[in-house]
Structures are given as structure tokens and as C-alpha cells.
Image (tube, rainbow, N blue to C red; front, side):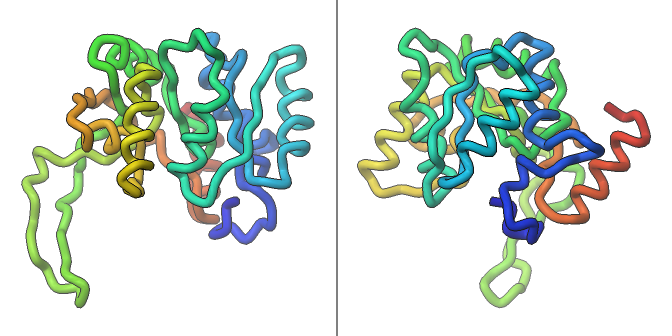
Length: 218
């Protein structure tokens, strides 16, 4: 819903330099012919807005729509439930990451086909601190082993469905899908992303995204 933007409507519908955020994101997948039959998970009550938007932006291109849930994990599970029956691989991507590269998408698909699961990520360039509830330093992990998670996260459909099924059975709520697979013993290949593949969440992020476009960086 983009609550932190205070826009009163889903951020995927908000224009970024004259083009709705979701349209910009889907165009990245369109370059690889991965838009047709995409599943669009929408906030309840806004499906008609998304249908109208994408019908105009991608005329003649079929999409499948499903309502999201209370948490990201529930939304993804809802999306998985409406995949076409013969779908072998699924790429799960944040609509709010409009600058994902075609190379990252392609490499995640190749890795998921081989290993069952893959996520786009970038090595951490910052020192990450672990703090306690009172904001005192507890631990400083080795930066060479740390990656910042991005999307898409791409999976063999049977693998990610099994991961979600187990999480539901065990009443476990995770922060991302790749971790659900790793949690049940699956291997997840890390695929190189880009600092430009950031998530547009706050007004500052929108301003930064505008600068990226104006600067011709994508």
C-alpha cells in the first residue's frame, strides 16, 4: 500500500517521471519476454485500478490478478495459487524495484533451473552491526560473508510451494521467500544484482529514482 509514502493508494500505481512504477518494473521483464501471463498481486479493493492501468500499458497482454494478504508471505502464497498449471519456474519480484537489470533476471532464472532456488543480491559494502534491544553493539559479522537481498527471487515452482506449505504448517512468518527455502534445507544460489536495483519505499527513494532516470543511469 505504500503507507510510508502517504499517497493514499498503492505505490505501484504512482507515477515515476510520468510512468507508473509498476509499468516501469514490468518493462524490465518485457525485454526478456516475461510479462505475458504475469501474476499481479494487488491490495484488496484496488484490482480494477491495476487492470485498467496494465490494460492500457500492455494492450492485448494477459495478466492474472489476485488479492494480497496481510503479510508479504501471504501475498506470495496467493500469487503462487494462480500460476498456470504448466509453470515450471516462477520469478517473484517487488513492483517497487523498477531498475532491475535484464542480466540479473536472466541469471536468476538460469540458477533456479539448476539449483531449485536463487535470489538476486549484492555484497555488502557497509559494516553491519548487530545490536541488542537497548541499541548496544553485540556483534560485528564478517562483511565478506554478508549480502543485501534484492529481487527477483526465482524458484522451481515445486520448491517454493513446498517451502510455503511447510512455513504455513509450522506457523512461521519469514521476511522473504528464499529464506523459506533455505529454512527447509534447500540450496539458494546468490545471483549478482546492482545498487540501482533498490526498493522505492519512501519519498526520498522516489527522489533518488527520479535522479537515476534524469541522469540516464538506466
